[in-house]
Amino acid sequence: MPYTAPDFLDVDSLLTDEERVVRDTVRSFVDERIMPDISRHFEEGTFPSEIVREMGELGLLGANIEGYGCAGMGDIAYGVICRELERGDSGIRSFASVQGSLVMYPIRNFGSEEQKQRWLPRLAKGEAIGCFGLTEPDFGSDPGGMITTAKPTADGWVLNGAKMWITNGSVSDVAVVWAKTPEGIRGFLVERGAKGFTAPDIDRKWSLRASHTSELVFDDVRLPKDAILPGTKGLVSALHCLNSARYGIAWGAVGAAQACYDEALTHAKTRVVYGKPIGRFQMVQNKLVEMLTAITNGQLMAWRLGSLKEAGKSHFTQVSMAKRHNVKMALDAARTTRDILGASGITHEYVCGRHAANLESVITYEGTHDIHMLIVGMHVTGLNALGNE
Image 1 (cartoon, rainbow, N blue to C red):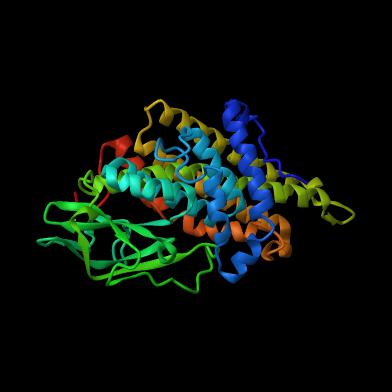
Image 2 (cartoon, rainbow, N blue to C red):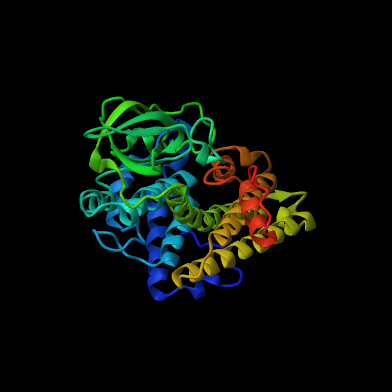
């Protein structure tokens, strides 16, 4: 049966006709191209690379970027894309988020015209893949403490350092890398094949298995002068990119939660214990109602945030709140679904275990649950609990 997402308050009626077309298109894509094989990819630790160009053809890569062959959709449409992709798997949504928000976004907003013309059309079509290098082995929540450096030379730059937990790293054609320079933190484009640049995969993961996660290592990598993203000015430029990606995560987590709830509800109606479906037991109904209520809150939060973003009125602390709330909500939904499914929930026949494992990464990356709490807390109190300031 075609998938129908739970939508108790008919939140999707708030979408425009165009946004509903985007929803239905991506939902069908996930049904036909993701769901049949994603469990196998997760088990084997592989990414379905054959879908990358298909995603490009559908306009799913850098969907809310204007010009240069990009789809130019609105921010809500981009959110809907993330929601539908993550219903399939967080690794698929992560690929699209990194490509669009963390690679294409900085090139579009901080790059030279030559960099935009060279990379954006190819990235939009899926003909090239990018990654984003900010986090380091010893600097995650404190990215400003990075030790990666780019030193100027007569004819360019010399890059040294390492980045960690990089989605798409080993398969990327270009990496957006953040490094300390004499002028502060700046962004650079580092191309595959540059001498001294390696990107070994991080193996033995039990989360985001259907995704490439890598380390980036720079050993006296010589870059031309025009490798710098000229519009980048300090760490704030990198944080703008992360804010764009976190917005997509806030939507994507809703999709994972909806997939789990749909599975739990189906099981509750069909699993017979003591001669009746377990959905007739009050405890199971309580779990389903709590889950559905939380999902509905997440839907409304994502949609409202998208509306503010499109009106140019959103604030990064609102994105932090939505990312924090919705990912925790989705992780709770995945765990509750596993509980309702009993032993069946630990098998790859069902989606809840895979979503639960993936969301353990999503709740940590691009700002941990606790760090986003401190970001919102600082905003509402005016008191900084981060660092030593």
